[in-house]
Amino acid sequence: MSGRAQLMWDPAVAGYDFGTGHPMDPVRLDLTRRLVGAFGLDREVEVVAAQRAGESTLRLVHREDYVAAVKAASADPDAADQAYGLGTVDDPAFAGMHEVSALIAGQSVGAAEAVWRGDALHAVNFAGGLHHAMPGAASGFCVYNDAALAVARLLELGAERVAYVDVDVHHGDGVQAAFWEDPRVLTISLHEHPRTLFPQTGWPYETGAGGAAEGSAVNVALPAGTGDAGWLRAFHAVVPELLAEFRPQVLVTQHGADTHFEDPLAHLAVSLDAQRAVQVACHGLAHEHADGRWIALGGGGYAVVDVVPRSWTHLVGIAAGREIAPETVIPDGWRQEVFARTRQLAPQRMTDGRWPVAYREWEAGYDPADRLDQAIVATRKAAFPLRGLLP
Picture 1 (tube, rainbow, N blue to C red):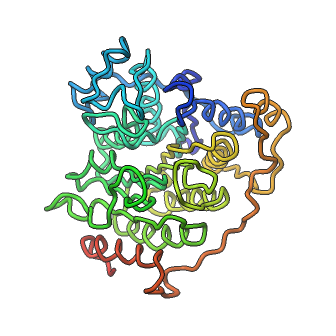
Picture 2: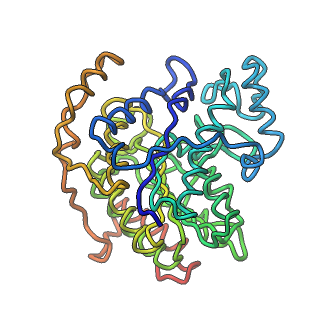
């Protein structure tokens, strides 16, 4: 085991571009990579550009007819078949869509291979985390589900237990669907309640298929407006105990930055500092339960200047073993480049001013009248007994 972290990056991933006005602005990827460089983190990790995922790899998760439909839409966007979720408002077809989507998937698959082989202990693909893509359809700005493909490759390589933890504001529905019947994969998703946010799934009662896979899916549906203390309380009330029971050989985490209070597409009120706290916690949990094997992915995030680059730069620093202190001043060169590219003023520090973030541990007791505690109890009652745990 080299112990060194890998950053999966190919500049061509910024070609994942649904067009002007679409929330998934690829500038967020380029600005993140440049902020990583501004802090010198690219000297602390091995920067690797993996190959594009080939058709046999894509078919570990996606149906053959769907891959063919993506290729056809990529060659002729006007011919996109909406029956496959292509050419829609959320997922407009664009030239080269198959190639760049497969390239992003290839980075996550490459991360999985490197960690499983022992070439790296941690690997980060912040361009990944496209967790809504289904086996047979695009969905929610996601064409190929790189997160599910990374997990599937780990299983193909011989992993017997893989845990996937998703803290994006939206439910990790595509990954859950891919492994709904597979007891080798534990999927845990913390997200805004499906009553108030796409994709309207991720209810606590969604616990996996029957039989051996029952209890392999866990969902925490958080009330709209949940802030730092509630978000961290929910994470720590659910995730560590499940990972201790499951004993994963690899931990795969998805760190969508759209839980942030500035994000325009959702309704949680989480700060950058709380996002950083969960990243630190995931790193620790990987070492505690998975011998340090950790694959960290990006995801959603539509405050593309203020939030996404800072959040994922923190993620890279944590994986590299060189955490960036929250109070750190952001280099002027990066801030000037942000203004030149976007005409927006960039943030000045790597914090929202809420570090350290305080929260109340679950063991301290719960309030049955509190909506956040009700959500936690619903999840624990639905899923924990299926894994032999007390709710």
